[in-house]
Amino acid sequence: MKYFPEHQKGIIAIVVAAILWSTGGIFIKLTTLSPMQISFFRCLFAALVFLVVFKSKLVKVNFFTFINAGFYAAVLILYVIATKTTTAANAVFLQYTAPIYVLIFEPLINKTKYEKINIITIIVCFIGMFLFFTGKLTAGNFYGNIIALLSGVAFAAFLLGMKKNKKEHQFVSIFYGNIFVVLISVYSIFEINTFSMSDLLMVSYLGIFQVGAAYIIFAYGLKRVLAVEASLISMIEPVLNPVWVLIGYGEIPSLMASIGGMIILFTVSLRAFILQSAIMKARYKNYL
Image (cartoon, rainbow, N blue to C red):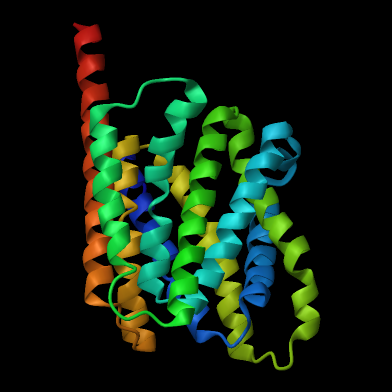
């Protein structure tokens, strides 16, 4: 990538990371392991990747590191359970409701007023979320949708916690989040009846590439692009995730869920774009 300017390198890195993230659904669906067994191996391999890459940097911790790690561990486990129990599209779209909860709880935490644009964003996104629970739902799908929503709540708590923490401690939370999952789910490996080579390859891929390498690549790209660019490009993940599952697993999300997901993604993306535009305009005025 030496022939690309830094900004282009950043965009390419974010795209690659988003594509890697998007492959999670298909391999979680295809493996015969239970959600907790998948979580154990996925996070074990991811933690090893972080250990090899970051080494001594992982000892730089504070109180918030472990709080955020707990939230991230919840995100990881709940996402796998949701993907196994409802459609991959529902799992990833409902997890992407996290920015809505951030908009709801951040003013309460920081004692600030709710902005009109944020209230509109929340209302529209809740309409999109409602569509996931319309039509015919099996008990498993309903349970999976609830778990996916909880994953979004945990993700929002993780994002708010990361904002509160110092930058040098933030990425370390990802490592310890994976460690927490390994400790929580270790019991499940003693319940494995059959463990095929294909299962091993799939959970290895999920840990090494879909979680570990993807985050490192994303962190590299994030240093070279605007936050809004990273946010918008990351939307590749929820768009491609159901596509890979459709191609490799034959799972088709419902029409209403697809519409709801598109409403959520469009609204969150538009809100991020408007926010970043306002920030850039303010910076330009200060520069003048």
